[in-house]
Length: 274
Image (cartoon, rainbow, N blue to C red; front, side, top):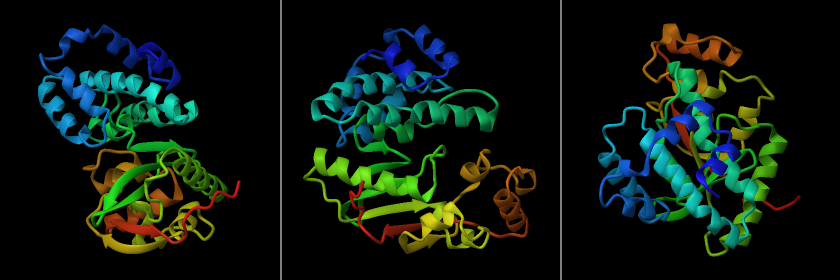
C-alpha cells in the first residue's frame, strides 16, 4: 500500500491530501529516518514521537508529522497481512487520522492535525479499532491490560458494543495469543459518576457505564472537548446546546459543577458468542 492508496482508503480530506502531496521527503532532517522505523515498534514509538516532534517544530499545522505517521501506517500494512489481521481492521484503525482532522475542523473552523501525541499508538500496532470501539495494549499498576477507548463516531448501541467486545476477544486470541486478556479497563468521562445524573434511563452511555466496576474518579478530568466538540478552554456560557445532554451539563457547569472522569474495569471478560 502506498500513500495515495492509504489516503483513499481512510477517506482523508482532499484538502489535507493535497497539502501532503506538496511535501517532499527531503523535509526530514538528516538522521530522522530512524525515528520512522522506531515509530512502528511499540517499545520505541513514544520516545521516537517526541524526538521527531522536536525535529519538526517549525510546522504549526503538524502536517509533516501527519505525513510521517501515515508513511509508517503504510509500512506496517504488510505486517497486518502477514499476521492475517483483516484489512478492514487496518482501515478502520487508520481512519482515526481523518476523524481527528475532522474534529479539528469542527472545533477550530479549519483543518489541521493535532493528535500526533496519540496516533503513534495506531502506527505501532498498540491500538486497534474493532467495530464500535478501540482497544489498546497498555499497562495498569504494572500489569499488562487491554484499554478500551470510545471513538467519537462509535455506534454506541448496546448490541454494537457487545459485538465489538466479542470480536476484539476473538481477534486478540487469534493474533496475539500471548497477550493477557483477563483485564479490560476504560478511563473516560463517559464513566463519570457525576455524568449519570444527567442521563436518561435507557441511555446507551448509562448502559455502557454499567459494564464496569469503577476503581477511581477524577473530578478534574475534562469532558468539554468530547461532549461539546469545542476547544477545552471554552467558557461554560459559550458552550453549545444542541442536545439534551449538552443543555443539562452546561447548566451544571454554569452552577460551578464538574463532570470529571472515571477509571473502571470491565466486570465480565468479553465472550466470543457470535
